[in-house]
Amino acid sequence: MAIEAQAPVVPITILGTREVMRKGAAWLRAGQVTLLFHEPIPTRGMTQKNREELMRTTRTTIASGLTWRRL
Image 1 (cartoon, rainbow, N blue to C red):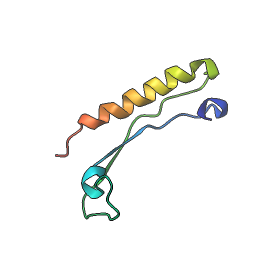
Image 2: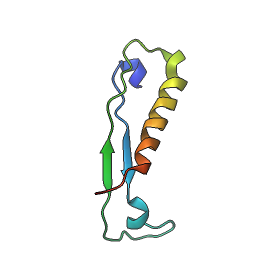
Image 3: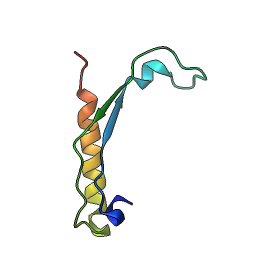
Image 4: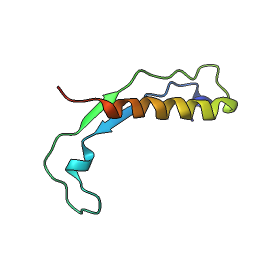
């Protein structure tokens, strides 16, 4: 959709959700969740031929935030 709209993709890394809601749990626990908003990835000039490249770049960007630590 971003390529069709020629709109940038803004990757977001979400940290802390494992502590807030354990796998298989039905209830949330109190805790802190951190959202890391990364720099937008431009799609201007991309076509559907660039789709895999855009997905790879987006995944890599999101994964880079997984090593981020709170101060």
